[in-house]
Image 1: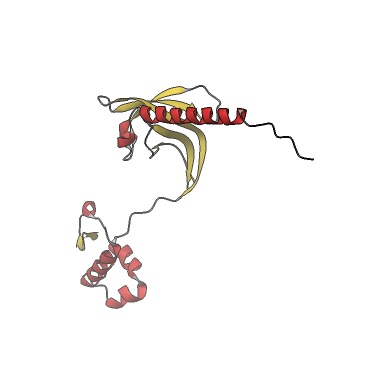
Image 2 (image 1 turned 30 degrees about the vertical axis):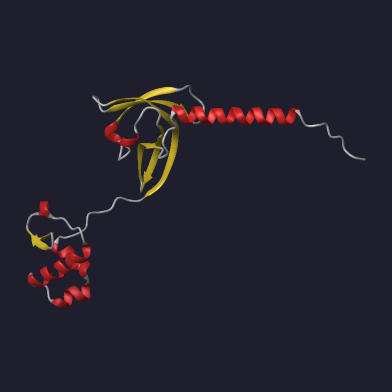
Length: 184
């Protein structure tokens, strides 16, 4: 049996990789003619027939995700990071409001590029649900960090000061207004 490997035909299935199917189709058509297939076969029966006869087929695709049913969703805050064990601890609040706050430990290995967001105070969502792909049901969890940075203590202090100044301003002006009686 022949296998396509990097633009040429190989007898080793372990080397079969097809990064670009356009190049692969040209290579398969050439290989088909080299292996005795007449040119009319590649033109009339199509490249798929030649691929089947040569044993060269793309890897089957997984069925699309049809549905994702959320079973429980938490909003979390990173409490601490443990680089020695490659984990972080998060305080979790059930968004359905049915349970008290919990703490959980998560592996940094489970993150896909979000490692730089894992700092104390960072916000994340942790979702557990059921994913339907074709006829297969799979329980999955999803951990996503917010892309907005956490507020610093200085930013929080400044916001509180501005809020207090606005509160004082409105308290002064509301109390100093004369009582207006409706004109008749």
